Image 1 (cartoon, rainbow, N blue to C red):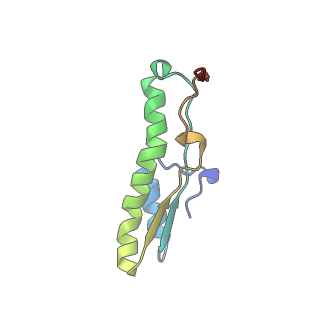
Image 2 (image 1 turned 90 degrees about the horizontal axis):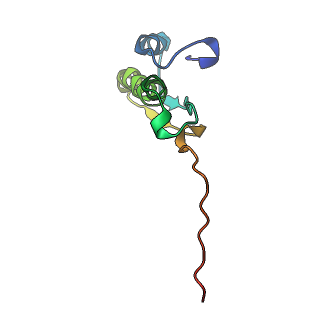
Amino acid sequence: MFDLSLGDDVRDSAQLNAAVERLPRLDVLVCCAGVTGDSLHTEDVSDEEWERVHAINLNGVFYANRAALPKMRAGGYGASSTSPRSRARRATPWPARTRRRRPA
């Protein structure tokens, strides 16, 4: 079991590899860790913040799938689901612009 609430870190591929190795069998992988990052305009996002968000939201999913696939193949079956159900899938909000209707 890989549990973020216990301090496991999806940015560390060695942790993911070790977690998969501890399992006797792996049939289903669900990746649902995601962060939004700081709510800033694009030009205000630092390189460090950009890299942190991508390390979790992209690298973590890749590392988990890469670690899981060999065990799934060895078991003869496997399925992977990635769920961007966090706020990470939303863009930084901009002020709403109202569209004016043209007179009829």
